[in-house]
Image (cartoon, rainbow, N blue to C red; front, side, top):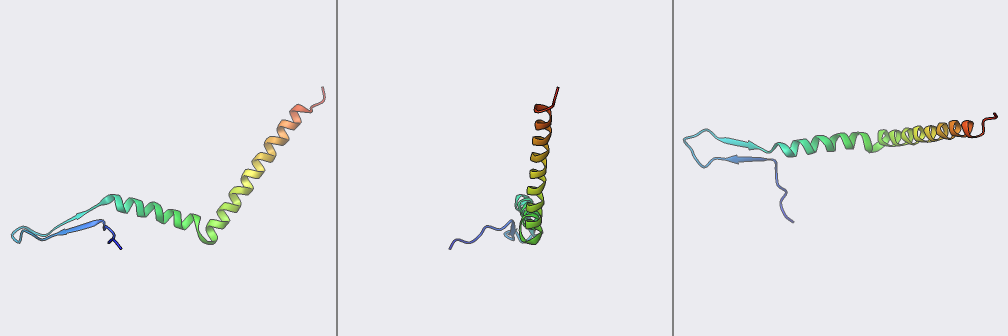
Length: 76
């Protein structure tokens, strides 16, 4: 197994200078997006959001069909 690369780096080569810590900010941005994804798309909340999204899409399709059918079959 290969070790995972971390988002921070510690350097202590020069004892006269204060310790330097370099932080890679790209890793924190990715983890924030993954946290939002995990919260909204998994578990009970994720299932509820998917079901409600499907219901909204079905209602919109039904309304488009109803309005279209009304104007196509309207008596003159």
